[in-house]
Every structure is written in C-alpha cells, then in structure tokens.
Image (cartoon, rainbow, N blue to C red):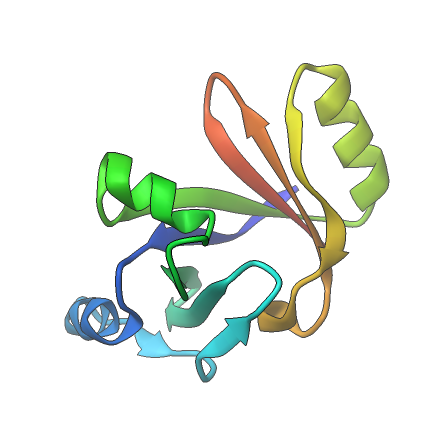
Length: 129
C-alpha cells in the first residue's frame, strides 16, 4: 500500500488553508461537504504530497472529539489499496476496530473508504484504488 494523503483536523478550512498555502500547498479541488460524516474537506497538494483538511460541520461531527483533545493536528493517514475488503479484514484480525463501515467518500470522487482504529498508531483510512 502507498500513502494517499494525510488528514488534518482543523476548526475551519479557510484559515488552515491559508497557512498551508504559505507552506507551498495549493488547493487540489474545491471544498466538499460530506453530509454523512458531518465534515467539510479540502484537498491540498505540494508536489507529490497530498493533505486533506477536515473541519466539522457541527458539534456532532466525529472530528470534534479530536479537536477538543489535540487541537488542530494530523488526524489520520490514508493508504491506497487494490483490495479494500481484504485489507480491512486483515487489519480487523490484527485487532483494529472498524470505526465506520466501508462506504463512498464524496471528497475522493466517490471511491470507497474504510476507517479503522489501531491502539498503537491511531486512526487509519483505507481508500480503494
């Protein structure tokens, strides 16, 4: 698997995007609202590096807990895989917890993703290649 992107939890997309722009990142796409996950998402690119800014739409968003605990910070690493279901099953067999069932992600062109929690490294996202 290769790293697809690093997700950053932020309070607001605009101010965070401005900081990343000063670091050489440019908007890769427009902001996407993911109503199911209650977040707004903006992908930014600097060369081969891709980051995903993830901001909560409201207090019920799963990102809010991370922001309260850690503030704006890296939230997850996303890995791309050709065998999504197989990778999810293998990670669950190794003790990872499936946080959210496999479903489409509007910010990644409808590609299917899965979020898993590993007690040793935190939140991992898998995206179907």
